[in-house]
Image (cartoon, rainbow, N blue to C red; front, side, top):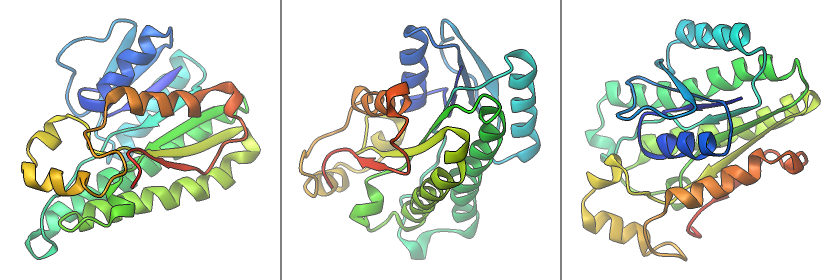
Length: 228
């Protein structure tokens, strides 16, 4: 059983289809429904910031399936503004979605996974953290918090047979990156060892590795794509 947040589009949608095609029973969730249904998967409209809704989702998973094997925390929002131009409402939304949402799903997933003493949790970070990109202060800060959370939860959950890791993609061709000015993307790519747009397949490759049963001793790791 594989749960993926932010599954209605972008990386989350690709991962949902990727794992459904591999025979996983996929549960996707996001604030809006996917444009196209995912064969072999189910989808729920959940705001990851809302604790009551998150707990209700996990109660349903426990009741219907009795277990959860994998969680991919992909849901996230960004702010690409100079700090002096970032309203507090935007900053709060980024923190609540990226940090609090990730924490809530990790906490509730671990409660269910520990019953079977097995679980894989993968959180999404970004190369904006090590690159310390100007114009992405609150976004990079939120993902730095996700990375710290990943490392600490890896230690807290290890006794239950649960691993917690993260992947930090370079920009991937999504609705978000299409709104970024080309010169800004060019500047970012110039700082990478592999200076071009990332791919969904590259992200899925890392998630595959983290989810593999053989990766039971891999935990607390952050793997960046593109060579920042």
